[in-house]
Length: 292
Ligand SMILES: Nc1nc2c(ncn2[C@@H]2O[C@H](COP(=O)(O)OP(=O)(O)OP(=O)(O)O)[C@@H](O)[C@H]2O)c(=O)[nH]1
Image (cartoon, rainbow, N blue to C red; front, side, top):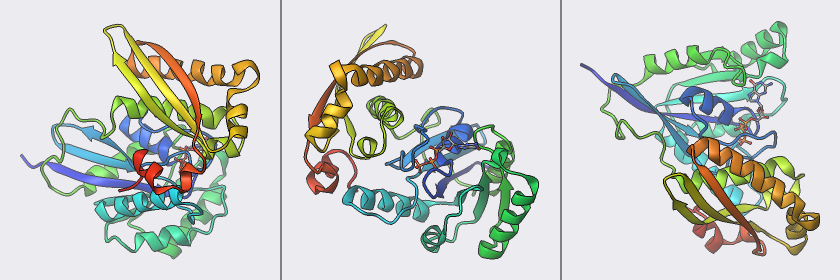
């Protein structure tokens, strides 16, 4: 019997809904989702397995013009994902008036078929959808265009059918019980980062990194310690909050997410540490897993 397998890259501008779509396609919470742009920093694989096929999705950081070294690394991850792709899903937010030429330039690195996904149509109307479809037809002439709502899982099944149909014949790339390339420590750190993105305004989330310093797995209980790293003392104070109240909120919500994700009781400790300008320092970016 023939078997299909391939790499499917999810790309687009920040906040378009790439992570929401990836989670909907994979059926698991692989990528953290927040209302802020640039939540996703790494390329994250999410794998769907059946006897007949293996789809290896990559969620990628939103395409931007990099302003500091961390963002440069984020863009390298997008480029790597495009080069490897057998199929590309270009996600675009129907309500955003982005100039998406930077995304298109990146697409030139690949000959893989492109599906344009016009997302968030739940917040739009039929006329706007028609116009957007015409716009993308003219601009990119993609293999197919879907109008979708990743959040409400509208038309997600149609995307899956399209992918399966267009997947190359190939043996599986990964073991069939493999769901992602990321380990439990990574997901634990992402669940803390998700809360930092949700609980604080602008500057703090983008200056924050989370490092898991202890991950002890017991039968019923996981003991997890994390360092939350910021760039300046002033950010540390904001992060901790008056009498530690803000940090406590972050810890409580992150712990709840972890308990759901790992299906264990979690004991979580968090510490805040300052590393000046870590986002622009090669050695720290490397240590934190951003350099290739
Ligand atoms: N109304 C609506 N909102 C959506 C939809 N899809 C995603 N969103 C919201 O859009 C915001 C951004 O979603 P993400 O999935 O994090 O977007 P992303 O493209 O991965 O963002 P980056 O990590 O910045 O690249 C979140 O608040 C989502 O809930 C949709 O179909 N409809």
